Amino acid sequence: MHALKDNMAAKKSAQVWIDENMPLLSDWHTNIWELAEPAWREFRSAKWYVECLRAEGFTVEEGSAGMPTAFSATWTNGMGGPTLLTYAEYDAVPGNNQSASVIEETRDGMSRFAPGHTDPHSALGISTLAGLLATKHAMTEFSISGTLKYTGEPAEKMHGSKVVHGLRGYYDDVDAIVSFHPFYMLPLCNTARWDTQCGAYYSKVYTFICDEPESWQLSSNPNSPIPASHSSARAPGANVALMSMYTTARIMQDAMLPSFGGWSLSDAILLDGQATADNLPARVARIQYSWRTPNIEMAEHVLAVLDRNAKNSAEMAHCSTEATWIARSRPGITNHVMATVLYENLTCVGAPVYDQNAIKVAQEIQKNLGLEVMDKPFLSECEKLISPQDAEALLREHLAPWQQNWTSDDYVEMTHYAPTVRFYISRPALKTPAGAGAYPGWVMNALGGIPATIDPTIVTAGKTISGTFIDLFTEPHLLKEARDEFNDRVAANPMPVLLDADFEPPINLPWPDYRARGEERSWG
Image 1: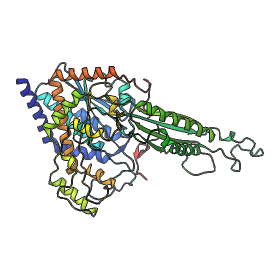
Image 2: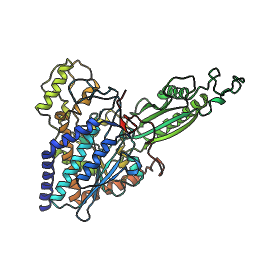
Image 3: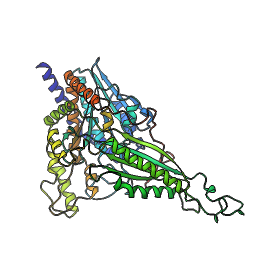
């Protein structure tokens, strides 16, 4: 009974720490939200986390696993004890610039094509940081032994960093992992995943290179003194190869996999080709494909089709082709012990509550859109808990019986190294008035940056993480049960890592950026 009382007192101390520091945590969130740096280019965001963690007494490795915008931080109290991990994400999405306001407008006069936080990863990181620091506070006050580990995970939108941290051993010494994300689709709101984890995710960049355009038609103009005369026949070039690849992939998309199962194929053209239109063949062009599938077998089928299309497109356009892996993630491994411990703590904390300030913000948005102003404007699910088992049952109603996994997220790689729970806390979302369509995308983005509406997410998630960590630190049987379940599941369905051990993160590709020669520039 004495141990239980200490456990509850430690949790209460952590919760009080979050309440007392919420103004500071809210300011921290606003800072990351405003920085809004895109994948692999989150230099200022990562630097902020590193400086904050060092100020809090953590030992921090910058640029962990060869990723300039990643980090790994540890803090130990006492002798012995387990190592528990949670993490920050902080990448934003180009083309989603939105101010923290009740109307559609950009931040600081920037182009609307600048990055913005959509999920929002800004709240993800500050929520886990709140839970981490609150746990540290309670561990110090109640002499709880153990190690806190906190990693900075850039480029989540590309599943970029966790597979790299895993390959380099950053999760090998971890006893348990808590993975958080603001909720993004029902029924996963204020709950933890149960059996249906995220599935496979592959991402690859195909580069087309026209290195020898002069060899396309050697006899086209034998009297020309130069090999690239403007009057000579031109090689098709890299742009033609890219467009052939793009078109064939779109044509083949319906034939790649069944029309159900929740799979998807996305593409993006990287902008490092010729800067101006000239009477010369394009020398380089790149296209990225990312695909989500319920299992590895389906992902490999898509890969075979894309590889074949790339080879044929390159040959047609007198190019060679190179391929660069961005990510290759395995489906996740569930852990009922971890999910149960976390949801019990979430039950004690309760769902987020939106006060009158938050309601006023939501009503202003509805008014500005010419919609009915509601007394209770937030989606009802945002203020309710749903058990992992009930969420699982609702989710399975929409899935094929054979399908074991759904959607994708790179937390799945962590689940192969230690017992892991994936949980969700509501981000603010509004009810749709009767007869009206969906809200424009800027609305949820704005709500993710306005303190009155996003702070409840941070409070709830932070308290849930700290309570879960304190249970795992103070009740050794929970970690043993979680590890036993983890070992059983890995033995029953082994899934080797999908990338080579020497895989290098693709940090040097021409990802969208807003910096030039070390200086900031505006998006155009």
